[in-house]
Amino acid sequence: MKHMKMFAFLMILAVGLSSCSLFNVDVDSEISGVLDAYVPEAMAKAADDWHPLVAAKDIDAQENDDVQEYSDNIEDIVVNEITATVTEVSHEGIILSANTVFYLIGGTKSAEWSKGEEWPIYVGATFTFDNLGTSYDDASKIILHAAKTEGESMITIGVDGESSMDGINVKIKITFGTTFTANIF
Image (cartoon, rainbow, N blue to C red):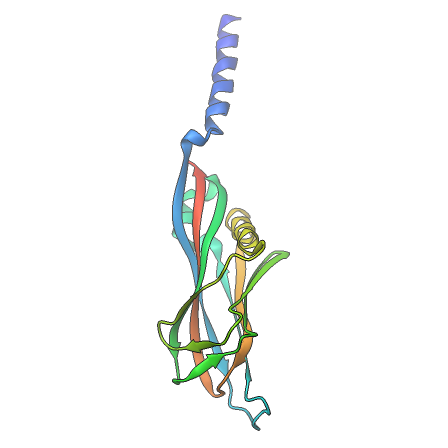
């Protein structure tokens, strides 16, 4: 009987310690993808001189090295920063309209961001999206679900907006700066 009590005590202690934050590790990581937007040449000039710019890309959240390392132990993911960086342009002088929206979709959830003003496009131009309302929280939930759920690891990033020029190609890297919390016990 004495051994049974000791065994029960050790089991309760082990379960308690395994859920203890003492064994949690925070890992800063990034999940990113590059949008490749092509705006074909217009057949006729539009009255407002804006041209549709649309692109989307699927990203497998479980291909991230940190997600793979801690996959079974991830408890939380917090998005700390979201940036858009222009990595390639085919022409100089391109401007994205103030109506341009960047988005993240995963499962049944989505989040979106807008610069809210015209954005000159050139290689190296970077924009950090503000954390308005619940947008970062929504992005955190989407990425956490994709990182933890087998068979549902795909998330979609995209842009839906307008360009000041047609016949162009623009590549924009969307980066989600995250902190993963994983229990290493």
